[in-house]
Image (tube, rainbow, N blue to C red; front, top):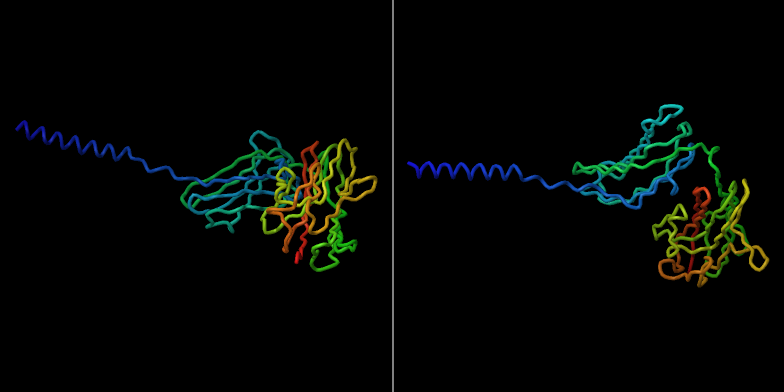
Length: 305
């Protein structure tokens, strides 16, 4: 009788132990999406109301993307002239495993000035969520210390104008091996210190820098580089520079061995070697005194036969 009781007790113990073990077994934690190369604004986490705003992120889903959202919400405790929020969702990324979220949108002109919470949210089909929260300041353009504007941009081929300030003299801007390509631009409404780059970038490189902070010189052909120091308010600079007392330095011969980077010219080889195809002329300006940037892009085709 005692033996039977012992056996029953052992069976009950084993059963209870196994049940307890199963209770302790927890499903493995689900992996959440990730985001890298996140850019909010033009590198300064500021937005000008009524103006274009830039956002970029490389996203990898754990399973597949279910939704991508951006939210700009007023901070608790801050004072604003009106209640306001801004939300966007981009369904075109739904179902992707990995993608580059590169977007431009306009900050509404009625957005009250102030400090905000900026949220980038990625929902995954596995039920997880990535949420990135950053500070964002919205400013009226009249209240920024400098408001750089790129203008008077023109392209000439062998001293013949083919593009000027949004007007195309030719349907497609085509230059060929041996042609002299002149790229001129002007930046207005600046002061203090800053830097201006004029560069050519192959479209197939899938590389779109929108601030000098993101400029990778191994992927660009520098046509002109200009720096300024201590400028008075409402000043301007251009891509021109003095070389031996003569203004120039804003052109490049298609097929040149080196670019015009300073202080050291870079060889035009590797990823940026000359070849036929679509290029972008990218004008990049950063006011280093006030950490404010702007840029402009004009497409150019090179026929390198």
